[in-house]
Length: 307
Image 1 (cartoon, helix red, strand yellow):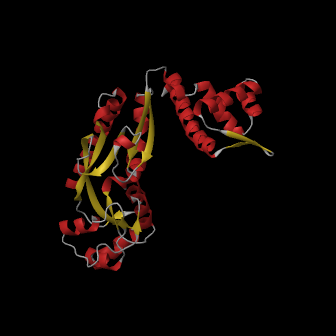
Image 2: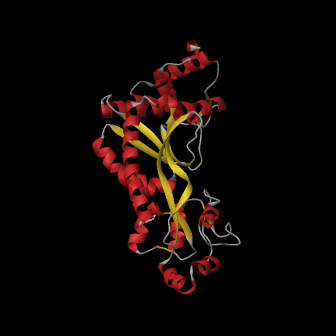
Image 3: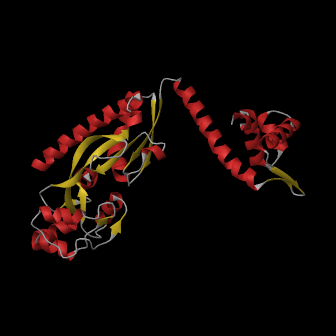
């Protein structure tokens, strides 16, 4: 198999020639002669048994096979460059962690706290991406993930972070109206804002309280909690939201709780990571920090729920 593997210098020359569609420009970029690039490409084509370039009246063009190969080689060379820059930046003492997080949890809970982690651990570089649905760790270059629901995740270890308490909220104008007609009438008068990721959110809350609604699934639907928050603040309807994710809106007076009781959701927040990466020291450092921050939030939630 190795007999078919071109050298790294040949692959760099191929990528540059494919990007410029010129052996001369590729040679200038790499600091070699045009004939050296031409010779490397001819050797590669003989080695692979495929034509990668064609010469036409308009100049150099990639063959179909060459175009596909160029795209794949380019991404791999970029990965090598990124890994090398990381090694140089951290002198081999640190590394990167790619963390998947629920969008609103990431924006409103994790990101505001990350500075504390990066200040304490500058040797670890965090890349944060958003994911809503669970996924297979084996198919993704992701080191860990936050998720909501149950603790089971195939091929992964999970730590329970904290529970979730939910409360109906609305525009401040609705509070005066609620005092006049009651929350039950208010729920029937205004649309119930829906989060696509929690289709049974309102049903769970209604089941846990004394209130009723003939169509708990009806109402404008949004993909992320962040959109639900904005819709409620714009007086589009009544939102049912995790209490700890809307602290800023409540403090600013943009949203008000419409019920005193906090209802616990049917799931919890979890931190999950592949079993194969359990010995990764950077991951364990981040995990320890996350668990500590979650414990602080958990205590705050429990205190608010019991107030």
